[in-house]
Picture (spheres, helix red, strand yellow):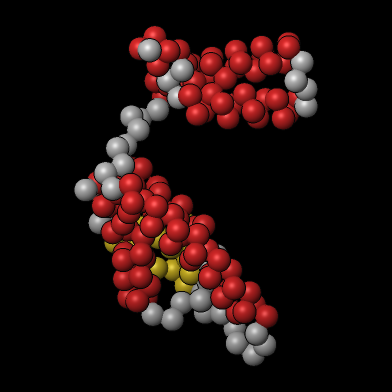
Length: 165
């Protein structure tokens, strides 16, 4: 079992690579299956030293609630942005917000920045090199402090619980 772990350091990635290869070539011929399998095993072996160790998820149920919350927020923000665009007579009030970070781990900061960017109406534009703050562009900014508190409570604290403890 241990030698299988060395040959397939990331079995899920290998399966995804094989599936993507077969979809790209649109063939299930034995030659393409063999070539896809070689690529699916070889690519992860070649690049595994470039990866940081995978973090340990400390609270899986919090992760499930976080994913559900993000998906709900994406749906809700799509409706709000659509309403803002389609509503006549009210122009959006765009602005930049400097968001002070509590999290410090590179993965957690990246996940927070990507979560903010996934939500329509907000884009993470810059992370300070010392990971002390994140610059966010907001399509319609009412209250800067309220936005900071909302991001902190809805996204940053759960991410800190899940990955940093």
